[in-house]
Structures are given as structure tokens and as C-alpha cells.
Length: 335
Image (cartoon, rainbow, N blue to C red; front, side, top):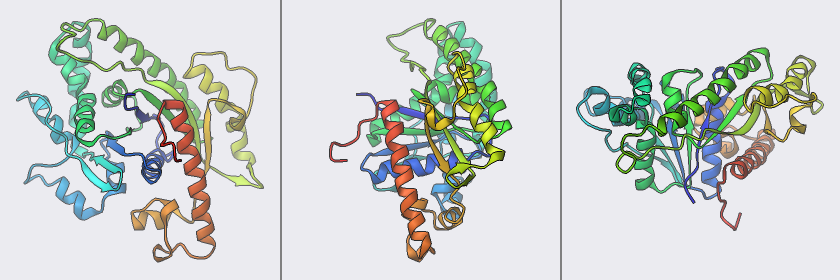
């Protein structure tokens, strides 16, 4: 079975997407599945979540050869060659990272220029657009992951389009608010358009035997609702009105289906899960550079916090399994 490449994508920022990728990556690793996390967001927030500042300074050192996704694609960007071998940062047992880089934003214009050139069958255009996919493949051959998790920025630009072309599945994190719903209305049609345009470009490959291309399935795996406020196990009134609208907007905008009768996300088969805001644990996790469900007393998680740590473990392990079910990710038989 091929390795599933799962992108986490929402063009609305501030929904907790990067934190979600970080925790899902750690959870799969804890469950015994080797994970390759790929930071394709030019803000590099996922890389900063995994690594401390000293290591970041080493990775981004301009006086030395940097060890990031930007360095991997630099020869292609500068016209001096093809992509290099991506640096793989070992984070822990079963978990590694292709680090992000703020310099990646310089790739945006080149990707924009080469997208229409693919429609004309230009070989270099295909090499540029598939640079991320080919970097992931090179890293996978060296690292042998069971799953690849890709974090992208909150926009509908050319970098994200190339990242989605490289992806098999797309998980959409949402907040129950007006801004996320408006963003979803833009994201859905754009995702469908990118998929159709890439399918058309694949058919124009000038040399299929020599130029291997990703399918660019970008298959919607479902959505998650993050940081929803809860009172007595139900969303507070301020959020409830938006939560009722999420299922219909997702079906209409992302799946191009009839929105159907209004239902809540927990009744929607397209909803992967609901995650509350772990207010007391998040600052500890950020300080300790550990996922919330692995916090220890030495990290400050004592007393009632330990119960919250256990709850976070249950929530994220359930979520990880649901994502696996929707993306064809095999779990070890012993789990």
C-alpha cells in the first residue's frame, strides 16, 4: 500500500491547524506508526513547535548550508539543477520532520509562473510544480514512514496549490465562527478547481515514462471543529449557530453536494471530530516542547492537570484513528 500523504488545509488562519498537525504527528508516533511531518508553511510554525530556538538558528544559518525544504528546492528555483536530498530532522522515536523555512515564500512567484506552462506541456514546469511531491518521495525512500503529514499556510496561493497537488487527502480544521465558514466557502471551490486543473495538466505530460507525476487526488477526508467553547457538554450559544451551519457549508462548498437538512457536526458523517480548547495544558506544552498528552509533573502537569492530560490522550488517539480510517492508513494489528 502506498504511503498516504495528508495535508491539513484551511485558508482561514488562527484555527489551531498547526497545533493539530503537531499533536496528530506525535500521537501516530506514540501508537507505533512512523511519521514524516512536512512543514510547507512559509511561516514555519510547525518547525518552531518541534524545535527549540538554538536548533532553529542552526537550521536557518545563512552562513552555512541551511537544512530546510527551501534548501532542497533551491537549485530548481535558481535554475542550477533539480531538487536536492531533503534534510530529515529526527524528532523522536517514529517521528521526523522536513523543516520549514521563511525563505520558502520566494518560491511563490516561480510556482505561479510555471502553473500555466504545465498546460503547455513544458517539462521544467512539471518539475517545478512537483518539487514538494518529489522531495517528500525522496525523504520517504530514506525514512520509510507509514504516513506523511503536511502543514500548509492559511491562504489560496501557489505554494499551497503545489502542496495540495502533492497530497492524497485533505483534512480541513475549522473554528465555529463566521470567518471559518466564509473561508470554507472559498476553499471548497478552489480545491475542486485545483484538482480539475491538475488532472488536465497530467494528461499533457510530454514524457510520462520519464516524468512521473502525482495523481493530485486532494481527496477531502473530512473536517474537524477546533477550540469550540463547551458548557455542560454543549457548545455555548455564541458558537452553536455557526456549528449548525458547518455541515451544510462543507457539503455544498467542498463536496459540491446539496447541503441537506441542518444538522450539528457530531451528527455529520463528514465530521472527523470535535476538539475542545485545552486552555490549561497548551501553555505548558509549548514551554516543554511536548504534546499536551505527554506532559509530566516535571512539566507542571500536576493534580487536576494529570486528568486533563489523560483526557487529551483519549481525544487525540480517537482522532488519529478516525483520520486513519478515512485515509487508508494501516494501524499495527496490536493496536
